[in-house]
Image 1 (cartoon, rainbow, N blue to C red):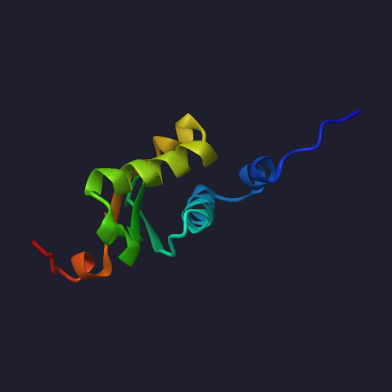
Image 2: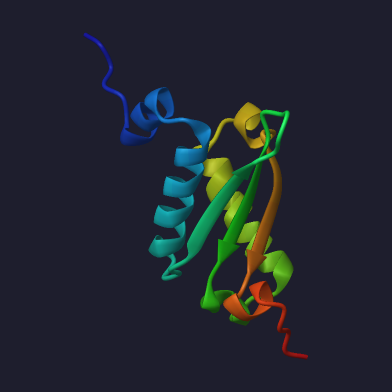
Length: 103
């Protein structure tokens, strides 16, 4: 009898990495009560991706806490090899994205 695949395993089989990253982050952050705008950009001439996650709720977190949260979600949803395809992750508030920082 064939073992049925979990939803995560099914998505990994068919969806390109950029779509899986966006879906995983959207779902994982939403589960933690964080609505975010997520953008991905391919690095020209490579198989790498840059990821930008923008949320007003990040204002309550230190930059390292934001990164830990995002990378924890990614490590739960991507293989190690796929994680190496992410060259950079930015985690910003909307104000930070526009160049405004509260001191």
